[in-house]
Image (cartoon, rainbow, N blue to C red; front, side, top):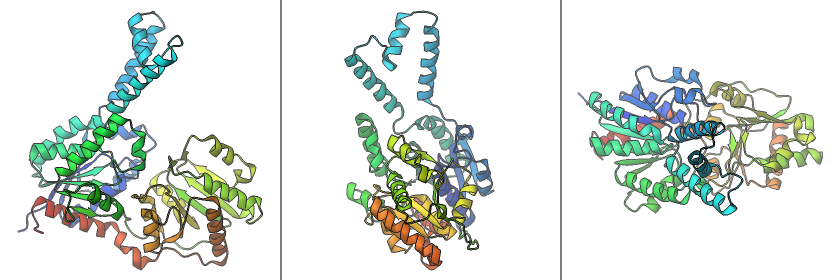
Length: 456
């Protein structure tokens, strides 16, 4: 009788969390269990999500009934420090204690402090804050996760650990459990870590520490999973000790095709699902849309742009653009909604939108979900970046640079095709390989090999 694969899955983001990374761990846990493995998921306490916009308890029903979910306590050192500072500030209004004033000065320099001192103390504050959140703000999950992880390894007969990141503290937990228990470890990178364009936002000391951590954990694992071919090649290029057989590409995916009847909307309905933030800047898109309407190239009553999930970009030019009268009734900014509701917006769209410029190694999970709802896709990205390459390889839709004139041309072309009824959805025969069950089968083989239960 074949020995069962007992998997300890470390997944900080897991239902009821509704963040993008949740769905990869959720689907893999389901299909690995369905395939015959015993899956135990170690994740964060439910209350860690309950006060955020990412809380969606309806997702709990999608967990396989035989998957064992264990939750570890999360400590928040930054929150403790902030609360302590607030308490001290309250006392200070009633008594002028010099020591308390000095403590407060380290965090909020008073009006009498010189400019040079302000810069100095602000630098100290930023460094302390950055280090307390190294490798990320969820590092407080590590102590209890290590404790419970060791217990689960013994009680469940675990023969392979699978850690999904980010947050990167989850991979660190996996590495430490590997060291303490000797159980083989597979690291899954849902995004680049130190190769992420956003990594440069961290402080110099924090970046140095994280580069060291990434290298160390890669040296101490049995296998690495990257969610794009580009990320896999980046690992092989940066770390000579990683061989071809150790790094695998397993993309994001979708559960199944969502067959929905074609509909005729009164407006040309364009939808972007997911929050726009950092370099996912919608200004070129909005400028292109504004110019098209202003120049009379497209009737204002014939187009709608739905930004589902909202915008988290503090940009005065963006605010001014959104307040222009010609865009007021065209652009709809919709706050974060449940996953089910987000899917409904996608199904009702005539064109689905991806903004992914400046991320050469990454492909947003939403693109795979777009494939499942079988709607035409417009990707604003470079053709030589990961998203653009995937779009072209699988004939998913149109790819344009994040430039006003290029976007204008694409909007007019897709609008004309919509009028004629010639907009084409992604071809089903080409994209079946992105179904979650197929991807989970590949992951099972990687885990089985890493555990030693299957020989190469």
